Length: 414
Image 1 (cartoon, rainbow, N blue to C red):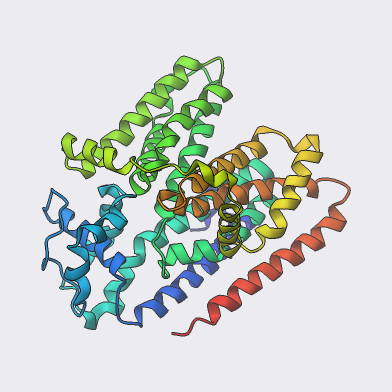
Image 2 (image 1 turned 180 degrees about the vertical axis):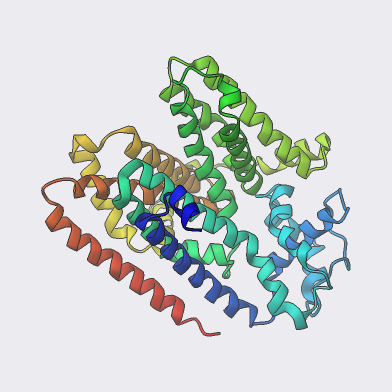
């Protein structure tokens, strides 16, 4: 074990990151346990799990089958979820991949889903959201540390691990889990950045990068499958590749085509390779009405700001300060800081344009990019002569932020 840890360079930064991740998992587990002791699933969660199980067990059409895989003790199931309106509320945002991924852990349960065993199999019902939340946190730390050093990695991970919104969505606490979409979007953007930086090496493009290309394809599939509107990533990925490697346009195009093909293959597989059902879903899910007037409505901005503050209160202080540094200090205006800011702003813009559709989830999906931007600004400032002044203030703000979240989670009774 000692040799393995030494080989993998498991030092103090990795240990501290693992400790923060454990605290994050502990907070999510506390909320999940409290929810499971209530003895029931929400109707929305039942629909997601039941639809996924029906597809796993042979119902290729994806249509809900009343009475099959029923959750004991939920009389409202048939009345609400066989209603076409009830189904449309959830189905407009997701592909069948979302239901398959969400329900996959339940395949490990060997018996019927009875209420008396709910405190056991209920953990499996929440496992997918928690898993992708953990993956997203680890990915954020890795990217932030590579871009900004240890300080940036710690700050980004602290912002994530004590974010009330991300804790709730990872635990499925009175909300639909969006961690798969968030990880897919974050993974697609920064895998594309990583691939672009390898294009300057004189190697066979596709063969040498096949692991990153597969990861990029899976991330795209997961993002689009969880939130159809994230199909905008298919256009954003080549833009990043061409911008970062302008002299390797053909190589970037080959990588984009390969990754997009993998994503399409994964999405088609979730439809059992039925092209008619796949294109029908694509057409129906992308038929949202864009509310351009939201840009002129102060209430839309207040709603968006309220959602961001509710998901991460410290952003009320951190984002204005980070933006001020970014626009006033020329040294901070480089790609590593600008890219996450631009992606975050783009996602928030989509949230404004689609306030009642899939845009509802976009503020949460934007959070990791905003955390990365704030971490980059803080890391740059900490490298200046003002470090002795900024570090205690930053530590105090982050400590207060973490303590507040821990106290809020602890107030939830089991």
